[in-house]
Length: 323
Image 1: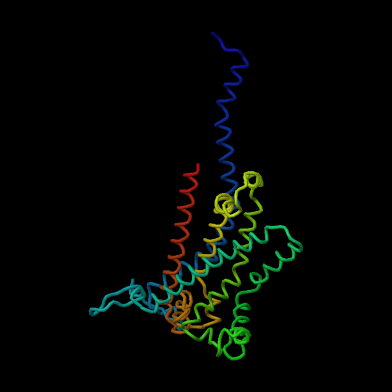
Image 2: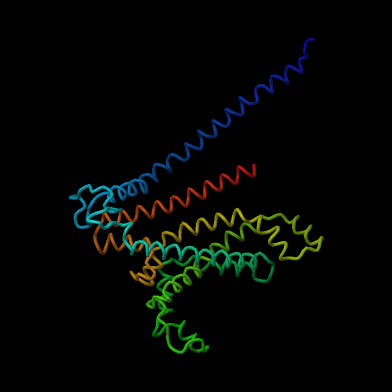
């Protein structure tokens, strides 16, 4: 039995669809690479070359006074065993103290910023008078440069004439002024407090953007069914904004792991608050040991890179599971 002309046309069209679709995909890929290549070249020049040079210096004994007359020493800056004793970065108690401080700062500050940012975002998502003005005002701490905010809080936390001690003493919470940034028991919490004050608006902004995108149908159905608002939050709102919240958290984690300016301005080289970045800067600038400082910077880069890769892997795995 012979096919009609219309059936042949449909069959030919159907046969040509995969080809045209594949060609369109290839064109889009080529166009994407055309836009990405200039950015990749600029990124390689600005970030790639300094990174490779830092990694190279970590295998040398270069000093800040003379970076041309150095020798290749292998992994001695990282770890070496001599005369029954381990030497190098990975055997340095000060380095591991810096790692502990950085992880503690990251976990506590990001956790507080996430919770407070979620509360602020939920409040700003409600309708009330002057909501636009409040939304703009809440971003002021985040808009202030970190150096400026750290110096401002440094004066406010001063043990002699800081307004924080003055207020606490006036309210009767303390009897004598506290050395917030000099006391080893208080300095880390002072740094965390300043970081939470500054970065909570960032978490609130991203969370608020996710809340603005939520469909209203789910909430109307929950209202009709008489579901409690707390149950609506945990069963509807939180699962829907979880992807955006995870993006905000990973950005903050990566930023907190490389924290430098806030800690250095408030507490300088104090071992109670020294982060990995502050430790690397101390070795590079004050001790003028470029090789050892480069090794610390390289390990810090590897930690941040592993966190990024783990997040990308888990995100891709989740996308595959959802698909």
